[in-house]
Image 1: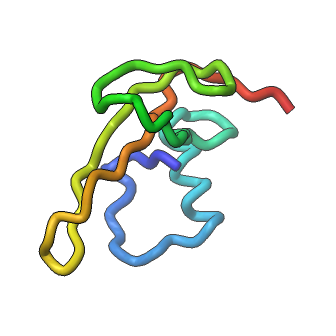
Image 2 (image 1 turned 30 degrees about the vertical axis):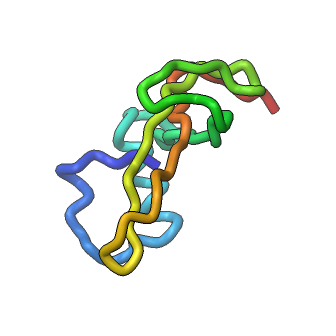
Image 3 (image 1 turned 90 degrees about the vertical axis):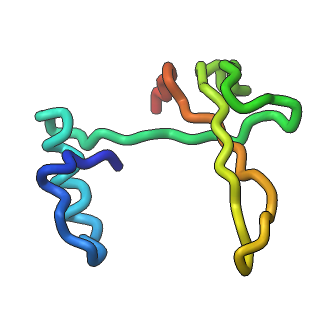
Length: 87
């Protein structure tokens, strides 16, 4: 969930209810703000805009990872920019 930085000042885990409450403050509504991520196709390049299997628009991001201070590859994921799921 997304929380307003000015309100999220505690280092320890907040628990589910407190996290949801902070997420609601982000939008000022009864539903918390969230970010959705999706695994991109293996051919997508970081910085590219893609359409996911669900038809959502996402930007592909890459985070360089290390293990024991050694490079361990790049974690790639799609950050959903436009999408909607109806239940």
